[in-house]
Amino acid sequence: MAERLSNSHEVLSRYSQHMLEVLDWLATYGAAPDGGVTRLLYTEPWLQAQQALKEKMQELGLESRFDAVGNVYGKLQGSHYTLRPVLTGSHVDTVKNGGKYDGAYGVVASMMALGYLKAVYGVPKRSLEVVSFCEEEGSRFPLAYWGSGHVTGVRSLAGSMDVADPEGITLSEAMREAGFQTANVGDHPAKREDIGAYIEIHIEQGSVLGYKKKQVGIVTAIVGQIRLTVVVKGNSNHAGTTPMTMRKDALAGTSEMVVVTEQMALEEGEPLVATVGRLHVKRGTSNVVPGEVEFTLDIRHTDELKMDLFCTKLLTKLNEIARRRELTIETVENLHATPVAMHEGISAEIEAACTAYGFQSMKLPSGAGHDAQLFGPLCPSAMIFVPSRGGISHSPDEFTEPEELVVGFQTLVHVLYQYGYGGKADEIL
Image (tube, rainbow, N blue to C red; front, top):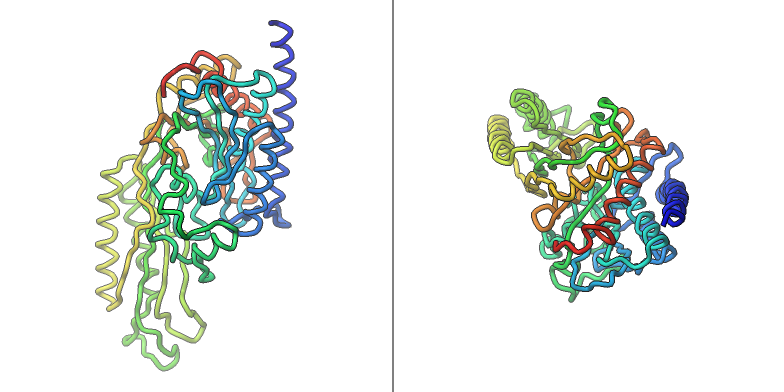
């Protein structure tokens, strides 16, 4: 037994190093010269990355497959078919010119964890699966959680196929171009109802762990989130011949709305945040009064009631601005995610793993949305955070020390071992 334990530590060290190498390798798909990474849903870099991950899962001895919308699974089949599987993973897509850790770390760490467990312990009692979700960010189309949303049944093909990206390419066209069928597959072609639990490891995307000098964050809850697309319309007229008093300037009105959004969020106070992240002046030129502007609105809070109330008050104010300026305003809600508490039992196992290894940990909420947010209402779900240097995320400057990545990886391995082989393997989920 002692010899096997010593050998397992040696193998774990090798897999930890290999995990870092695979993370660097994955960053080559969609890499930019400045170090950033861009893998938008159904683009060529995205497709190449998912195909490469599928092959890597096979090399690790996992049963790998694509589902109908582009999620990639790697399965370590258990011996007890009546036990519901534990799913672990994250997303492979990025924001435009993002970093190499957000999402990707969770996919790679989970994949390598299952590879290690199979190499050292063989067949588990309970099946363990890794997933590389096709999309979470909402960076190409205004539909976040496209991957996990299909698995959980929150998203469907119905009503989404005509949604277009900034270049006018519809979601349906993008799916077909990437090799995924949209006809005669039903509205929920990737939905699953057999998952026993979901565990996700992720960079913090904040600075709390670094400030507190902790190696592991045990997530207690994920904030609620509302995402809206707002379209403001006025009259497009000649910039030289239209007097200022006769203008219906959509951009000027939008500018006031952006400032009001910030002011109202500041007045509301923490933990609420509200962000206008993207603004597009349609057919905008230097010598034309802008006639139409589209912008995004992101509202988050740990309390769903307060989040919804703030959104209602803000939209009322934006409509008042539009009426006063003789503009029209239309809003479309693209996402309404409720705050979700993480599972206390799995979180306790994460804490126990940190204690066993001597890792410094703390409990904290997540201010960012994650795929675990969609699984939380359906099955026991938990999240492990590792530090982000300076709290920087969604940027080429995103960075986590290799030693901190390894600490998170080994924590995940310990927890997955418990549910696949150890004391929690027979637990009904």
